[in-house]
Length: 66
Image (cartoon, rainbow, N blue to C red; front, side):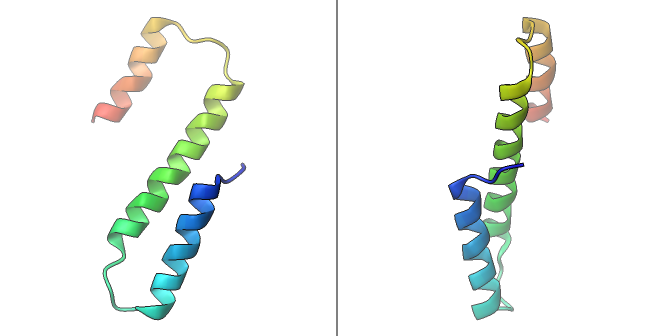
């Protein structure tokens, strides 16, 4: 799995933030990093998958609404 520049950057920022401010709230950066990792993985899966039917797209989209 390849990491986007954004994911790498966020990981670095989070690491520095945890090092420099160990007792600070890092939840915003953690959420951004998690989101970026999900985006990276979804891009990989979509790129390697065959074309989806409209019904399949709806089922997958429904996961994001929950």
